[in-house]
Image (cartoon, rainbow, N blue to C red):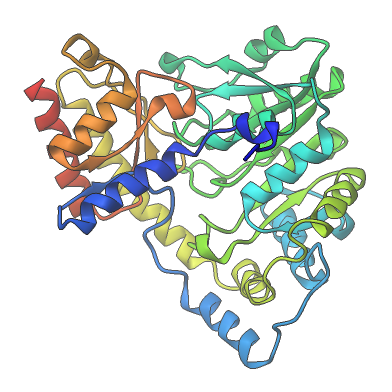
Length: 390
């Protein structure tokens, strides 16, 4: 059977592959410490679950408008205004089936074949593959580990060419936890506008920032709105990964183009999940602060423990819930690369991590600390034992 050429441009997500490998061991009764999943270990808050249950009982189970119900779009726009000072209209909002869907639609609607997309490394696994799928060229811009993997306008300016169509900014970053400084983000947006380049602001982890830092959105600066596309998600913020609700905030032309695409692919987001999302956005926000407090404790613990392992360095994550330790010292002791490291760590110590090569760097692995302190302590001890055994 001959498959379409565009399918050969993309690879299977390594985060999914890690999950499958860990699952096989668990099925055999092995005690696996799984640092792979990029989702909160907290349950969806009760008020949100109850809103979904009420939607079922009231028979809100039919098709909705393709781009989401107006009440949900209004809730998204109003919360973004409250939190970031933005001034989006409901017509500039589209509800998607998760943040990944929003990003995929934006790439498909805004980028032509042959365009360049600048993607800072380390990067979330899907950015590069989505770019390739739509026929664009991912251009990887390597950030500095010594500077905490933060993107800067000066760095970006050197990478822009006449073929550049889109710049990806993911802050807080998956996998590194890097956070772009607010003033730097503004400089990046100004540069993109000057060069007539789109800026994709992926705000999936926007509410998980440490050290009393306040969430930031470049969408809150109307002077850049003609060139900014915000991709957001309720998945991490409200522990709603399985509900599959994301959104975009963008110029009307982009929204209408994505709406057209959505009408011929997925159609509307789940009706029940939309009602739950309204409650998430308009109801109590206590659960978000509670998760952040717990993540902050875990972050401090895991970074300290990782740095205590001989041969391991770890940049301080400013947000999200990932540590991205440098394990390259193991390459002098019989380990070939980050994939080999991850495979052998799983085989010998039954700890699942995602190899850095999935994110565009080969000296690191990603560790999710969206899991219990007991699991973190056990996993880091096993990682220590693995490193010292090489």
